[in-house]
Image (cartoon, rainbow over all chains, first blue to last red; front, top):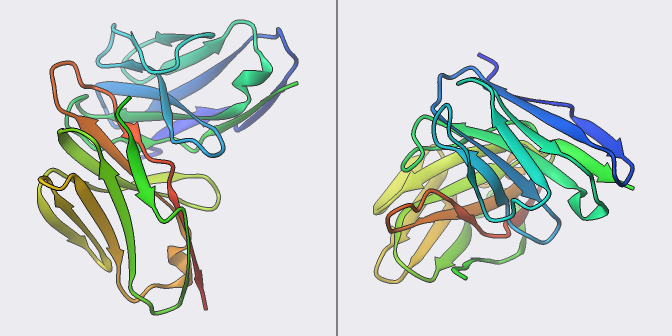
Length: 113
Length: 111
């Protein structure tokens, strides 16, 4: 089992460019999450998907869109990247949304120039 | 805004020492998580607890619901324990699907 995988591992963008971060899990989990981690701050939730076919905003959704493509995959899109979106992005999954342990991917380090 | 406070922010210990990391939160919760972030960046869940105490190997997590406080203890610390330890809580209430994370405690264990 690979667990939670993310691509790419590193990315450099120019302001205004767009990109999609990919996430997949092979644990048959219902719920998936996208977080960002910035220096000196705790992990912050961008979007989550409680189950296949549903997505909801988290704490910091502005500038991002998500797609729950199927039960395995949850992608995060930056339509017009800004320097403030320079961060490390983590995808996570859990069996259920309310009570379960979350399993994290390895992260994507994104720099927006 | 509900906060999760961790202390200390940084901790340096000699190999073999007993280590305590603290976490406090402001309102009622349904669950508290302890996570470990390795120097390479990967994040692993260590414990999820809502009451009492849990133990896994040299790691012990306790929670005091009345005092809104949790501790993570590491016995006989080892350099491989060097990591950032993160506390996260799920606040009580309908629709509380999000975890609120602390800023982490960076632990360095010196041989």
